[in-house]
Image (cartoon, rainbow, N blue to C red):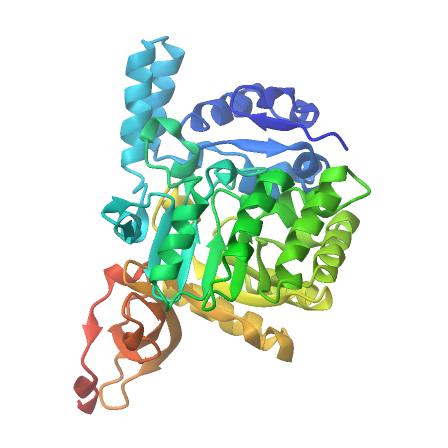
Length: 426
């Protein structure tokens, strides 16, 4: 298969768009000026049911629709475009809408570390044992998710991108921080890099022989959006990519692929299943994660099916997230209580091996907040969320249960108030 990408400028070239009324094509065109749009021929030809595209989860996952903006935002932008207002006016409207979408949730900008007085803008160091590395060549994806919490990475006008090329500075920073045992390549998607570029990074890290650095992992959607990246029969680059990844396991370091799957339909193609086998043969451990998304996977059966299929393929279910408060958040978000009940129902049906899932989890400013349950005060009958941090900026505060007031429509931890334990005495 020839790799063909579609973006905001040429999406109308997709053959299947003949199913769409002209009005819907125009709506996609307008909204994709705000929400970064990109898809490819694997997603279009293998994953989307075009006979039912309006309700198809992968179509919604890839193609922006007008409901991802507020009515006011859409009306303002649509009017400016259709009335041929100046480029500067249209761009200002787009910028203002993006600024209303909370482009950097969870105080991401506060996670940028320093080395000898220099900001390392391609690193994030939030938790003491792991750093996130944003290689500049990997700050795009094979296709863009409409809900993506890192959507500013794909918007050059915002100048909010994390990225860097200087692996020597990354290595120097790790050397100075002996608690770091893991580097996570992220983006964007690091698997969009050509294998030769990725190999230079990997060889430098291995050659550095940092005794406390024992784990390398990759956050990627490529298994879902372009599994051909790991298929030697498809291209020479497929074998080069596998050989590069095998350098990690051959060196004695732990190789982990953090695979992002949002729906069971992404797991059913033969090419994906072959890619998984090829990665496992390289010594990779593949863990899976995704957020719960209204309009895409907002029912327990999808999650139970997804985990069962993943386990059958030898994958390890890892995180069930709550959608972050960024981008078209209102379109995708669900109440915390509803997500917790969804998790309960899904995990009960998934079998023993799915118990590796930590969820539901919010990646908030202080850390990853795990909703452990909904409990009732036996004295007055009041309900509370029982939570804990499974990751925290201050690692000493992890795995300590606490209680928050229960609100059935709350969608994020910041909307809740912590309750002292002594209040349970009545």
